[in-house]
Image (tube, rainbow, N blue to C red; front, side, top):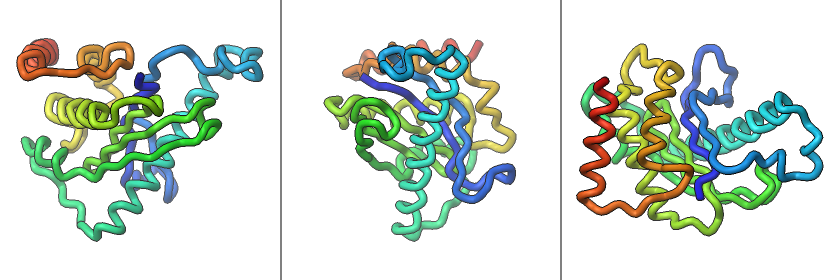
Amino acid sequence: MVRCFLIHTVCPVSVLSAGDTRVLYSRVFGPDEALLCQQHRELSSEDRRLLQKEKISVVARQVWSAISLSREASGRLLVDPAPGQEAAAVQDADSGVMRLRAGDPFTGETVVLWLGVHSLAFTLVCEPHENLLLAEGTLRNLSQHCLESLHMLGPGSEVLLKSSRIDVLLSRLLPHGQLLFLNHRFTQSLEKDVASFLLK
C-alpha cells in the first residue's frame, strides 16, 4: 500500500532559504499514524495534523537532497521544457528509490520512490513489501498525467489551485493508496475517463 503521495519543489524558490523545499500537494492514505501510536494518542487533532505535516516535510527534504545529489553527480544542465513536451520531461527525469528506517519519520520502515521533473518532485511513500516496479510505473503515470493535463511546468502554474484535479487523478490511478496492475485496455479507458473529467 502507498502511504502518501507528494508534489514538492526541488529548485530554489525566492521565498525559501537554500536547501529548503515547499510541499505543494500531499495526500496521505490509510489510518492516521498518530492514533495508532501510544505516545501520540493524547494529541489534539490540530497537533496530529501538524505532526503529519512535519513528517511529510521531512520526506520532502530527504527527496530534495537525493535529487540534488543525483543532478550534481550526473552533471546535466536543466533545460526548461517547451509546452507540450511533458512526456519527454518525464522520460528524462531523475528518479530514485530510498529506504527510510522505522521512526524516520514514520513509525514503520518505508520505501520512497521519487521522480524529479525539472523544478518539481513527485514522490510516493510505500510499504517496504510493495512491488517497486509497479510503484515506479504508477508514479511515472501519475506525474505524466499531472504535467500534461494540469500544465504544471508552464509559467504561472498554480498547483495549489488544482488540488481537486489531482485528487481525481489519484482516485482513478491510485484508489485508496492501492497500486493497480493495468492492462492496455484498462489504461485506455482510465485515460479517457480522466480526460473527460479534466475537460469539465
